[in-house]
Length: 89
Figure (tube, rainbow, N blue to C red):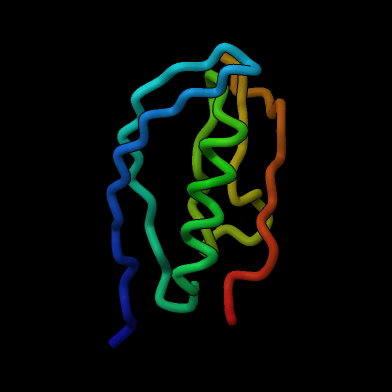
C-alpha cells in the first residue's frame, strides 16, 4: 500500500515592513512521504517571504515539471517560478 501525504496547517501573521505587506495566512501544505520536514518548512518559509496575490503551492512531487511555488495572475499566466532544492535528506 502506498503512503499518502500528510497535511500540515500553519497560521502565520505576516508583517513585511519593507514591502508593506501585512497579512494573516492560514496555510495548508502537504508533505509527501519522501519529503523531509526541513523541505516542508523551507517551502512554507519561501511562500511567506515571496507572498503576493496569486501565490500558491504546486501539487508537489506528483508534478515534477511544476515549481514548488508559483505566482499566477488572474488570467493564469505564470508570473514567478519558485523552486526549493531537493526534497530528500
